[in-house]
Each structure stands twice: as structure tokens, then as C-alpha cells.
Length: 389
Image (cartoon, rainbow, N blue to C red; front, top):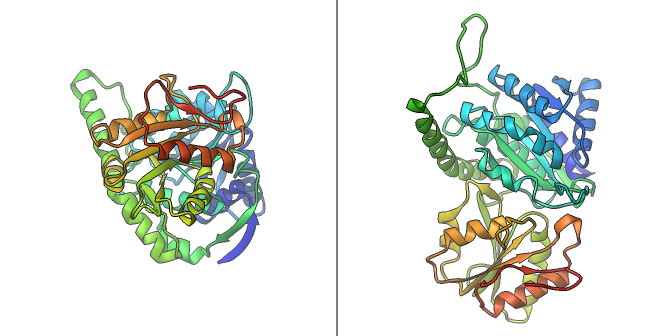
């Protein structure tokens, strides 16, 4: 193991190198480009034995990734914002064909209004595509989660693509201390990819044909069951990762000072670090505040969420995206999971389009949650020039 001071984009590239990925289709888009630039350097310098394919668009990138994965090789790509949107049509192929592609999406707002700054409205709509989807908090977790992603996605009980999402610029272009594990440790944790089915010219077969109504529903059902089955694998992989590298992340979600909490905030991504600091402040004043870090949007941890919130009187949800129903997508999911819990639920939106989320914003959110008022007319907004409900 060596310690490096690197950005999350470079931490991802190091993880891909350690995972011994064999095919990397790419198209540049800010703020993910740093990942592909460093991977190209690794290949050019003979440090990574992989095929780097510069495609003409993100739609082609995912098409190449699908072809490589169905050919039986470990595949990686990355994108962001409009690039992910351009992939949309092809994103629906890997889940249904059961291809364990790993992709990093560096979160960035999807215009209009055009911008290159942080928002989750590029990845949130794709949670319905069949990809497993997780969000990381810092640069170390970005590296670790890419390694975990291959172990989860390639498990025979799962065999699904996995999208690792990280906050653009806050992580992608900010350097932190990152422990880069040794190759021998990674080889133990992540064995060579052994595909269940591959296309082989010597044994012609058809994969992903037109599916008539006689079989389409069964395919959807099997995909839904595979996503549900990934819950157990995600927990197992997190435990194995902890035994191997000394770091665990809690699987689908992670809790902070929830043992006796009376009210809490659920967050995802980098804002979790700010919320953790506010919880410490509140605890020092005797307040029973807690924090839930949501790591996976797919599978959504409904059962786990019910368990960790069973003693709360109120729960707030932080959203960095909109569902255009008056609320954010995370709150919409949480409200569905906890609709019969009796807990006062509220939605708190902030940080859209790259606007800063400050300690003061999170203090204000916790103050609102502590009042125990359930949401009525819509989400609470923070950081607006004029606050509006």
C-alpha cells in the first residue's frame, strides 16, 4: 500500500488499473476527463495492459463497452451529464443482457440552464435503467468503491452493471490523502473475471434478440429479482473488503450516531461530511441528532431504512436533484419506503447547479427537522436568494 494525494478522478483511474481492466472505451467530457487522461497514460507507459478505444460519442462508448463485455473481458468507462444522457438508449442493454460493466459518472448538472457544476440530475433518472447505482462521499471511497463494484457486478448471483457516482469538482478536482492498495491485495480481493456466457465466433449464438410478449415479462421479472439479490452480495463484499483492506462502508447505507437519535438527516455524496460535523455540534449541546448516509439508490435499501429509523420521531432528506413533483427523487423514494412508519418526513433541497451547501445550511436543515413537522406543500429550499416553500 502507498499513500498518494490525488483527486477522486485519479483515485478512480488507479482503481481501474489495479482491477486489471482490459477494455476502456472513452469520450471526453468535463469533469470526468481526468480519469481517461490518466488511464491513457497508464496504457501508454506500459503500466496497464488494456485496449483504449476513443469512440465518436458516448452512445458509441456504451455500444463498445457492451460488445467488449459480451466478449468476456472486464470493461470500464466513465461519463457525466450530457454524455450520460447521450448513452441513455444503450444503458438499458447491459442490465437485461446481464453484463457486469462498471462505469463512473462524475455528477454534473444536465442543462438547460447549461452548466458544468455539481448536481445529481444527470444520474438520478438513470436509476430506472436497471443499473446498480451508488454514491461516494470522498476520494478514498471512490477508489474503494470501484474495486467493490467489480466484485459485486461479476458475482454470479448478480451479473449486472454498476454505476459509481461521485460529486463533480468537489471530489473530481480536489486532492485528498488516498491509500492505494498493493496489486497482490487487490488480486486476492478481485479474482480474474470469469463470464457466465460469451460470444465466441467458433460457437455462433444469438444474444439480445427481439423478445416477443411470450418472454419479455419474464425477463423484466428476472432483472428485478437480480437487483434484489444484489443486496446480500453488496453486504458480503463490504465485509470482505473490510477484512482485506481495513475499511468498511456499511453496504447499502451507513449510520452515524443513530443509536439513540430522536431526529436525523438522510444524505448522499459529499454533503454527508458537512452533515457529520453538524451532528457533532448538536451532540455537544445534548441534542439527540443522527445521520444516515445513503450509499445505494439501486437497490434502494427499503428494509434497512425501516430498521435504522424505527425509533425516530422525524427524518429529513437532502436532495441535490428535482423530480418535478415538488420534491427530490431521494425523498420520493424514502417517502414510499416509510409511508406507514408514522415518522414526520421532510424534504430539503440545496446545492443545485453547483451552489455551495454550507455548514449554516445544514444547521438550518437540522433545526427544521428537530421541529418534527411533516412535509405538506413541498420541499424546503436552502441557499435560494429568497427562501421559498
